Image (cartoon, rainbow, N blue to C red; front, side):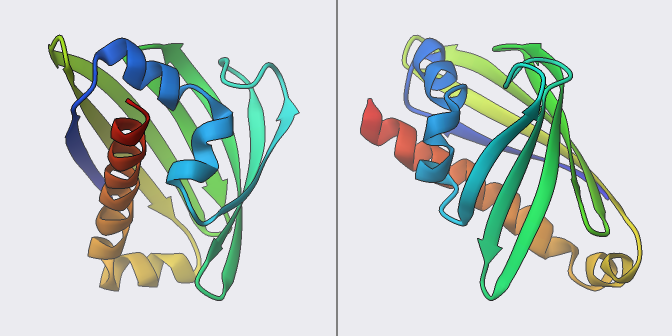
Length: 145
């Protein structure tokens, strides 16, 4: 399953990147995130691996992030592996004006096991979750100014 989501943020691109690129901010716009732990490499750099633990409702989800491309603001990409799910994400940031930035997030999901059935019957849930993260980042970033 592939799709793209985008949102306009009312801040200059440099400020958006500064906020996006700080791992200490992750919990501020991803409220289900319980922990972010570097496993190997230099965090945020290509080849770096990190363990993310999320609480989603009653479920706890652990995933491994591997940074594949870091060329901000043009591209920040990575893979995210969880049980039954392999997600490839490409993020791009585009200046719209001196005070507005577009964030484009391209997603590709590959599923195995029971997740194949969940994805087949509920593809909208994945798109909704992605848009929710973009919206939460926008709200967080604009409050920071």
